[in-house]
Length: 350
Image (tube, rainbow, N blue to C red; front, side):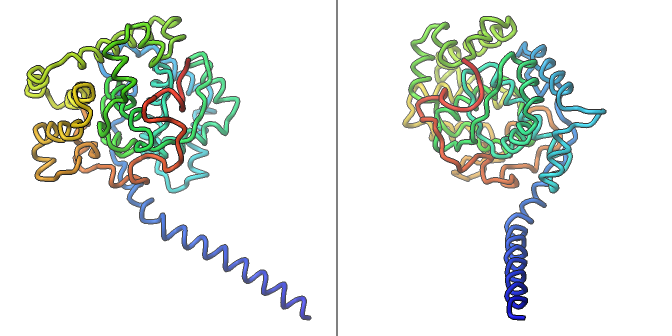
């Protein structure tokens, strides 16, 4: 009879531990999940992943979409979405769609750049589940860009500020901001370009820029990739050669849809001119461009607000990274990247 008592006590303890753990998990994530679910209300997903009109990369995007359709849809059902519903039942359909859009944008950047660190735990979450379909994922990558996009753990912006600055600049050149871009990726334009990248922009020739920063093989093999890389290099050098007067003219002549491009130009200019005063100049520029949003705050609120940079959305006025399921859309994991390099981890190609 004694052994029955001990077995019963052990079962009771195990049940208590499991129930307590579940209650603790619900308390710590329940409210956050509710905010996260309610946050995604826009159904206006942009066509062509929100690619800017001046970027001639639509064929590659169409190839990505066709490859995803082929390898991740079965009988008109998205098997990645079904897996997300099973593994993350609190994620709404709209939340999945917006985060999938950002994951696809990440793949597009990986097809252009030498390396692309992953700066969002939220996007990385989808990527992890996508990798569970090992054969489908490999076929998707091969069909889309001719090589595997290798996974690396999400990294933090503060640990890799130079890499994050380069990510911000390229993202802004390629894509229009959505109501959720900053909520998913975290603040934009918070850090100056690394010294290595600054030196390449000022002193490097086109071939050196391509080899150090971009996907050299695809630039050689894909005319569309080469065209976009040439455009990006021209924009980099144009921003680096601006002066204060020209930057001021860009500011006064900038429409709402070009605000992010203005901030990106300023990021390059102030990184190269005087990195030590970068934050002061960028905050001053935000005060000028967004006087109503900024008010008297000294913090970089527009960097963390999607409403400041969203280009073509009528319902972006109330969304910010404060409702994200992580404080900045980035990871707390350790990084293998250094702040002076943007080519040591993440997706991309040689």
